[in-house]
Image (tube, rainbow over all chains, first blue to last red; front, top):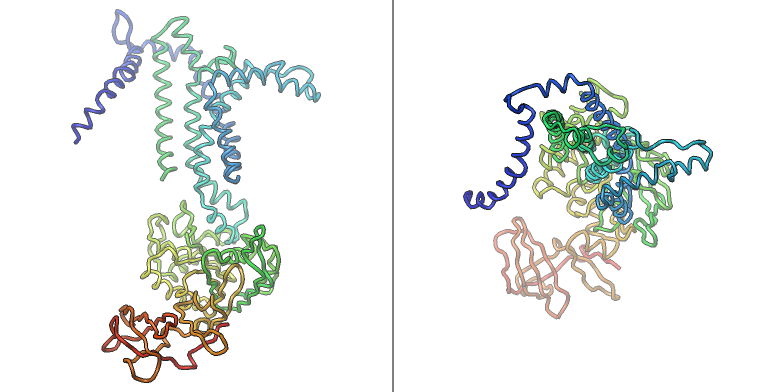
Length: 272
Length: 323
């Protein structure tokens, strides 16, 4: 039985090893190799000695963190609001949240230019109301990148959070109320702790995705907001310094894996 | 410790009345059961008293205080659901301590009081477990302990034993009754199980389509039901035509059987004899085409067998006219 099972899986396994794992191992190894000289750590050394790389890494972390926090601030109330809706309205709300998945990320990102540009909807509205005299620059800076990423990644937080929230039995909240607990206590002592594992797992997932984001920073950042993926693009396609890119990728991979390990632990708790 | 008074309480959803002009008085320390089939509005009534729902008409008093518009938080009630509604992220002890924490009772005092409540429901030594690590019966005990730990004015139980198997249910019925008597707390229980209602309560309120059918002590409701619905809902009912086109009720336990031809009585044939342990239940076909009857007779010595001819009779005092 075990033998037959393996023979079914074998082709896929070969594909995985050849197409995915081997390139990653090659990529990891590249950083430790210099043509003609063999094993070396100089690419990692260069990483530490060149401040711009660490700065970009820090920058990426910071933008990812802000986008994640923005996602939490919008996503939690949104998921909670959806939980309270009637069946039909809830379905529509879910569809609206999932809708971005169906639209190409490029289209969505360019749409933000229409909305946030100097002559865009938001700026025209702000000037029309007299709140500002000159257009506010939302684009081609960190603000634009953050807004764009928060938008693209919102479903990744809202959907697991919503799933955890509708699993909470209303009777738990009613029982707490009958015991005299005011709404604030019910929220912080019962409701919030029960959603916390899903919130933490969703947040980490969004953060991981933010770290490797390429398209949105490239377009909405206009090349002025360097994030790791864009730096890698430069190192590979323009300079080209593959070994350096490989070292940076390795570090990004390690950071991501560490966070992913945390995510797995929380996710197991959330689904327990 | 308080009494409960409902005055003309109604709850309408559109044109449907889940509770229709219900009056009820539950005196201090009394155990009253609201009994009805599913959809009779019994749970709605309980949620109105608990404050989880607002009546469309009428007034609700707890301990003489008008609580009609008071939220659940201000009613000081202990509430137990069929689904237990234990907080899954807390231990047993934390669950029981929760209502105390809300009342600013913390630390050692809360711990002591909670452990006492757990002792009361015979759940010692499990206080560090999570609800998911307990059996259904144990979870229900935790829910009970949590509902009484803060000495509520009234205790409301919504089908508390409905999810348990029969043996456990009977065990817990006895414990529940003892607990209620020990605490002397005014208790209102909702159930669709007539046996549970008959065995636990001081009085039963039978509900159908949101309307009160009868409020009476168990024996009275069983032997002297106010109408056909109550008669049939509380157990097996033999309806017999009596003078003036009226109908009378005889419960199976009051039906007497003797060998054919003896003691006068109506001749009948045994269709089915079902052995129930202490009793034998006979399904009878009366001569002359009257409605079939059921008799429940203590099993002593010999039982009649299917097909046997018997003679059926009952005392006139055991016949109760129902409309």
